[in-house]
Amino acid sequence: LVVVMATALAVNQPSAFSADFRSQELQQQQQWKLKRLLRALDGVRGHNGTSLITLLVPPRHPLSRPAKLLAEEIGAAGNIKSRANRLAVLWALASVQQRLKVYSRVPDNGLVIFCGTIVTEDGKEKKVTIDLEPCKPVQSPIYLCDSRFHTEALQSMLETDERRFGFIVLDGSGALFAVLSGSERRVLHRMSVELPRKHGRGGQSAVRFARIRLEKRHNYLRKVAELASGLFLEPDSGRPAVDGLVLAGSADFKVELQQGGLLDARLAGKTLQVVDIAYGGEVGLNQAIELASDCLTGLAYLEEKRCLARLFEELGHGRQQLVCYGVGQTVAALESGAVDTVLAWEELPYDCVLTASRQLKLIPRQACRSAAGGQHGDGVEVTDCGLDEPRPLIDWLADAGCPAAGAQLRVLACRSPEGVQFANGFGGLAGLLRYPLDWEDPESLQSGAQTDAEAVADEDASDVYDCFDLGDY
Image (cartoon, rainbow, N blue to C red; front, side, top):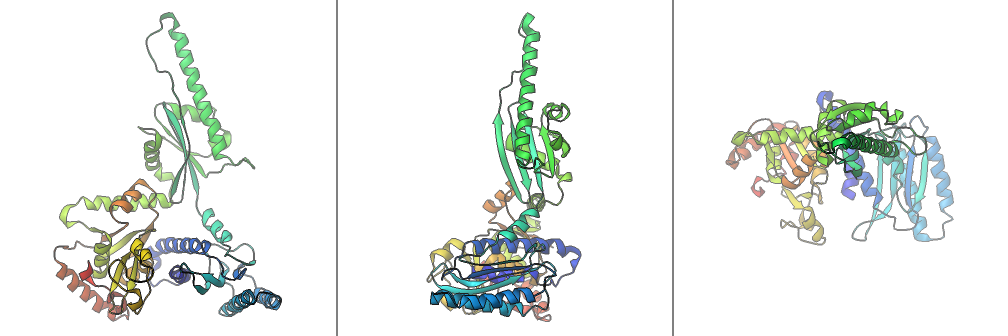
């Protein structure tokens, strides 16, 4: 948790790279770091009663107001009967006061401060103070002193940043309703149906059989339209709960649903595209997302699929492939300066530690947790590491590894089918290379890494490159 909090402080630090191709990646990394921080803060509790302070200051808000509020709270905190709780609250209030003095004015998007004494996983007390500028403007001032940190306002900012698109996939065997938002694809409802098929039997009753078949098709489409209204319209206001609707299906079902007047007019006006697919169910949903990608621009789900599609395409180029995958291979290629883009799963199950000999040791997350008081999975003693405590590998990539190597970092949620394959089959870490590497000759990698380290040393950044030890991979 402490490592996550320390990493989150870099959310609003200025980038050293030009903004021509970094702005999108930096914004995506900032949102990911904020989400990671909020998840960590949701799981902590205060040690002494209500001693955790949450302070939100809107933009263009004078700093004198929260300063005056804190002074009044310090006076009132002297009346707390519990000595331990009183001291914890007074320390938190004084720390927030000191942090406010760092700012000459409120940042453009406002200011958020979390401060208090928390209980770590091993039962020890830890004093933390976190201040950051959120990704969107703070709407109203908030001051809360509770037994937990209140992150609801920041979480709502991240949720409103994602558009929602509805999908209706229907064929002769059933219908599927789903929502695509951000990096998440969620199935809302499934229904199955048995429709009569065309046949040449019946004699004089053939016309009656055809009429029954058309009637059942109409009832099926009417039921689909009713379910769509219940799933894609807000129950209170009746407004569409999606920014767009995509109709997908085989045969004429989708056309009849759109042009037959069965679909609610509020949803019909949100229809973006009607696509033909060969299958129903979730397979048809994946196909519909691919075919409608032109009208779904900017979604993290599609960006993830495009990044991984390039990775899988390069994997088919034989021995001179321009990709590397796996934790050890990717870190070694990053150290050699050959990586252009690093693709990393946001739940990458590895920690890392910088030892006293300037070597980066990788620790499987499970091994790290099971060795809380001593030896790690690769034989590194935490108490003897000297320079660093274990931290998530993906945090190190974002803060030190990728910036020092001049590589882009794309953090993936891995919720698409390609993402699940990437997380399970490739370890959740891969790199797109600038030029092919000869993995059968580790000496050439090491010599190339030394050359790059010497070049970066002129820019006072060699300490990052010195922390690798290619012998471990």
